[in-house]
Picture 1 (cartoon, rainbow, N blue to C red):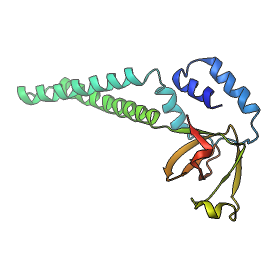
Picture 2: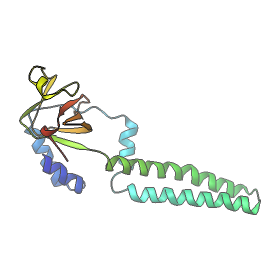
Picture 3: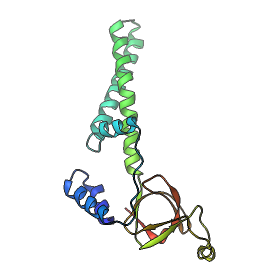
Picture 4: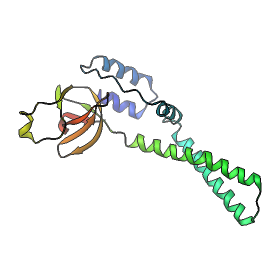
Length: 179
């Protein structure tokens, strides 16, 4: 699963990787249903896909710059032309959200850390504990090899992860590997 996810990260448009991941998911022990996303997130993800991040961000930047130039021109010429006012208002009204959305999407894709459980079985704990307490403290949930989780943070030899169903907990860092 780890290598399939890494390959998908490099070439997300390849259907072979998606098919291989689906086959591997069918063989996993853990079956967590994914939380449904709000409609505005799914729409923004379709609008700002990996292929359209750069052109839309550059278009937003261009519209922003042209809008600022029109404002400067209006101030320099000391004229109150309605078309110039409409032009910079429209350019800024469309350009700023395009620029902000593109930058936010590129930040999210760069900082989206996933991980795969690499051991046959490991416990998911509420908080990180020292090694002497692991055997005495029962874990809240057992997760198994191949499960893809979202990596939130790491502290010493513990990592906080979020399961596909939204449950958050701590696992030992040596039981997972980053994608």
